[in-house]
Image 1 (tube, rainbow, N blue to C red):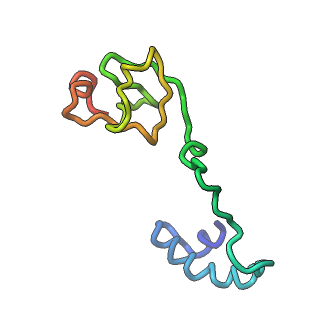
Image 2: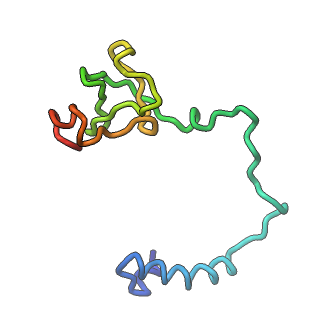
Length: 114
């Protein structure tokens, strides 16, 4: 941060320019070669469900128009998911598998587009 201030960077473009000039010298001075050649990451086991691990699920009440609210946004299940109406009362909602209703959907006409 001090380097950006000292270089007079005021915009994102300025900051990127400063970093392009600054980082090579910084990495040369402080960089340490890897102890082993190759990637430090390993491939996950076959069948590992990365989407399930990196998913946040929260309970939400299902409205009559088959929507739920999540952090102030009105969401509908994605087209490939079953209707929320078939779930009883409340359902787990993952922001990654929900979509914002289109402006032509009846729920948006009644609630206002978000």
